[in-house]
Image: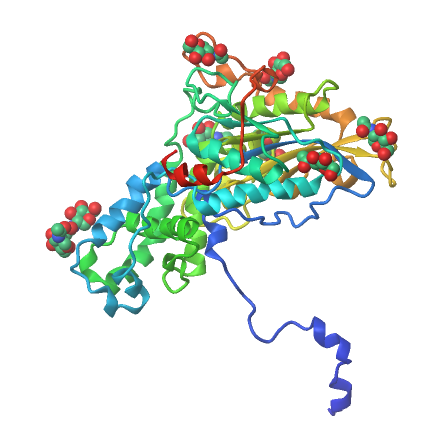
Length: 472
Ligand SMILES: *[C@@H]1O[C@H](CO)[C@@H](O)[C@H](O)[C@H]1NC(C)=O
Ligand SMILES: *[C@@H]1O[C@H](CO)[C@@H](O)[C@H](O)[C@H]1NC(C)=O
Ligand SMILES: *[C@@H]1O[C@H](CO)[C@@H](O)[C@H](O)[C@H]1NC(C)=O
Ligand SMILES: *[C@@H]1O[C@H](CO)[C@@H](O)[C@H](O)[C@H]1NC(C)=O
Ligand SMILES: *[C@@H]1O[C@H](CO)[C@@H](O)[C@H](O)[C@H]1NC(C)=O
Ligand SMILES: *[C@@H]1O[C@H](CO)[C@@H](O)[C@H](O)[C@H]1NC(C)=O
Ligand SMILES: *[C@@H]1O[C@H](CO)[C@@H](O)[C@H](O)[C@H]1NC(C)=O
Ligand SMILES: CC(=O)N[C@H]1CO[C@H](CO)[C@@H](O)[C@@H]1O
């Protein structure tokens, strides 16, 4: 059989659509570091963040995790410091081992206190303020922004405010006490929930850590037999990739010569297992902890006598995932017709099809936005009397609320929002009961947004405040 060469030649235009003959695989460990991932927008799902055609944002609420910090206390004490302490024992000559030669000169970043927001963290929080100002055409600048009392949440909020306001002194910061008896009425409701345990998930996570670190340890041992490598050293090095980066801008620990792409995905999955049982669908208290914020926020956005167009609140990494559970988002069981949720997070191999990916859910500065939209044109959607719709965005990506998606681009019509919220309330009816509170004055309702706390004005950084900012 003869095939003429001419018939094989493709038209020039087709070349652009050909699959490349070389691999274009690329991988960034920083996007797989779970709670230590520097802020990024993963496009999960890859939908357009812009409001649907004919809709403008009329009000919005944001729940934001604090920006990047030097190190979380637990991580520092459990993984980071023990590893760097071990490095002080100079029995191994690192300079002779190509993959580990950086250890001969690497020193941990120096900081006064672990849990302070880094320079990069402050900048990213300000950037979020600027970015938020782009999203609106008609929203009024807020008078108040809220943060829980910790230094890292307050500093993140201050940096955010400096990015959002135009002049000095426009916006006040109200801080909400991180009390252990506040009931649901704080930005840290897990702290006043006795049934929430900070260590939940570590046991299940460890099962998978022991599995995935085995071949890594064998490799490291072959390279440096005198070091007495442990699984915690592997976690320490993988965590240093994130913390070193958010302090110094880059880190030799992120090298793909040290840990392969799959090993970074395994680190991420071990973290996902932990967060699944800690603040995700694998914990009975996640939904009850997250629901009161959702309840109060939806009522505030829907209310006619709202004080502000924009409600922004800064908290820690535990609350945003709990709110996502309360909404039913990133549910591995969604649309499966079954609810065997723990089976979706096996501890002996990675479930690559999962929706619960903590790097997308709770990186530094992670943010959940609930936007109220005014859609003047129906654009073929069922004509509704009320032009108001709600959409939820997680790190800028629009999400579809399970059970409420009849509006433009799967937004939730105001006429159905109340019924949807009632449905969620029926699943998580009682914070105090689910939390097994052991104090008498608990509450299931978030009221602090409506309280008369004037807060404190946030000033631009002056020369003198810059000089003293390290000591505050
Ligand atoms: C250094 O490591 C070697 C080999 O593991 C060990 O025998 C020695 O005790 C260690 N020294 C210190 C000070 O930890
Ligand atoms: C309950 O009482 C404690 C101690 O007086 C107080 O700190 C806390 O804020 C109260 N909780 C609520 C929900 O009012
Ligand atoms: C190696 O590490 C393990 C676990 O931390 C420890 O129990 C053991 O004593 C260490 N061995 C040496 C020789 O340092
Ligand atoms: C998932 O596992 C946790 C921890 O063992 C347990 O408390 C929870 O009830 C389980 N959830 C389901 C739906 O089985
Ligand atoms: C997760 O999805 C399953 C299956 O649709 C559903 O039964 C379950 O209620 C969902 N969980 C939550 C907390 O919404
Ligand atoms: C919604 O937009 C329409 C058209 O721009 C405007 O007339 C109406 O006042 C807006 N409604 C609200 C509640 O903002
Ligand atoms: C939702 O908030 C309202 C008050 O705004 C309250 O009456 C209701 O109990 C709350 N629902 C739940 C389940 O907490
Ligand atoms: C929150 C925010 O940035 N609001 C701004 C939206 O745009 C108008 C008009 O440009 C400004 O006046 C608001 O301050």
